[in-house]
Structures are given as structure tokens and as C-alpha cells.
Amino acid sequence: MTSWRLGVIGSPIAHSASPALHLAGLAYLGYQGTSQRLDVDQDHAYRIRDVMGVEFDALSLTMPLKEVAATLCDELDERATTLGVVNSLLWREGRLLGASTDGAGFVDSLRGQCSVSVADMHVVVLGSGGAARAIVDALVRDGAASVSVLGRNPLSVAQLVKSDARVMDHTAMYRPVDLIVNTTPSTTRAAESAVMHGVTSSTIAIDITYEPRESPWLAMHAAAGCAHHNGLAMLAYTVARQMNWWWNSDIPGSLLLPVLVEAFK
Image (cartoon, rainbow, N blue to C red; front, side):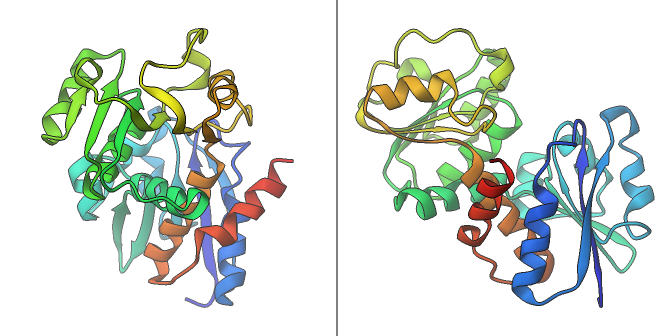
């Protein structure tokens, strides 16, 4: 491949900083290429196969396409097969390949930004949607002692609980909490009044959203003395994983995080 045609696809997409991350990855490896945004909603997801190999060689995916895109792929990596979602696509020899790097990217960001391993941690995950599914899977894979899930959809919570013996609903959570992760969309959250019982100043609080940079939920945990971070690091390390999957390379997530910080100033 002499020049890579990269992009990010989803809806809405105008805010996405993925093209800047793609260009930084290309520059790091000394590759040539471009990256652009493509606004495609769920009703037009069939366009994914139309553009792959014709307009794009590889794509990052965002909402609302992660689940439907998995059904369009000819081959999925092991995590995507388990989760039923993809966030990265690669066109190779006429076949559409899909991978899921959200969960692994989250764990990478914890190592890179907080210098911690999730092994033996007691974790609370707020939310039970696609992002939570990927993060819970990665936490279990990396040796978390327990993962308690608090979500509004009883069915999706039950599905997560069934995924591994260490995953439970919040009524059986271990205390104190080492790590709490908020995966719920910021626009659907109720007003916060207090930190969850079991959260202490030793707890790490991660909000995977980054608009605003410090959500009211994150600010509340900051006031409680928790180490706290928004979702920019997860995004940087997740996209690094995507590009390393495309190219079998070793782009570090730490290289991409400053690019994101600059893009969102």
C-alpha cells in the first residue's frame, strides 16, 4: 500500500478527532495517506461495504454503527466475535475484516495514564450498553477480581452478569471500590448528589465521555479526592490499537493523547 485511505464513519461525525490521530499514526510510521470523516447513520449502514476498497482501505467506527457493521464483515477478530461489535474495519484482498479495540484501549489507557493494572481490582461499571460490554470484557480478561454493573436495562445487565463469574449486578458489589467507570451517555444522566457507597479518595474515577472535559459526575469524584480522568485517553489508546491492528505496528497510545488534547482545546 503506497498511500492509505483512512477515515472515521458514524453519525454525528463532524466532531470526531480520529482523522488527526490517523495522520499522527501515519507520520509515526513514515506512511503516506489521508483521513476523512463520513457521516452515515444506522439506516444507511449498507454503505460501509460500498465504500470499503473503493474509497477507504481502513475505517474507525463510532456510534451507531458498531453492532450492524459486525454483521457486514467477512471475518471478525476474537474480541469482536465475543462482543458482537466492531470499532475498526480493514479491507484486505476483497474481504471486510472487523475488530473491537474499545475494551483493550480502555485498559491500555489505565496503564498509560494512571500507571495501574486492573488485576485484582474491584471495579464498578455504570451503564450496560456497548461501551460497557467491551470494558467489562477487557476488565475480566485482564484479571479484575470483581466487576459490578449498575445499568438501567435489566436484560443487558443480566447478559453481562452471565458473561463471567466475576461479573455481578451492583447489589452484590465488593467494597471498597478500586475503580469506577461511567459509560453512560452524558445527555441521559440524572443529576448526581453523592458518590456511591464504597468509593473513597483511593478510588480511580474514569468518565469515558469527554464533552464536557469534566462532567458533573467527574467533578463530584474530583471533589471527593479521587484520581479522575475523562475519556480522551481511552480514545487515544483505542485508536492506537486500531492502527496497530491495521498495520501490525507498535504505535503507542501516549503518542496520540497530546494530539487529542490539542484538537480539543
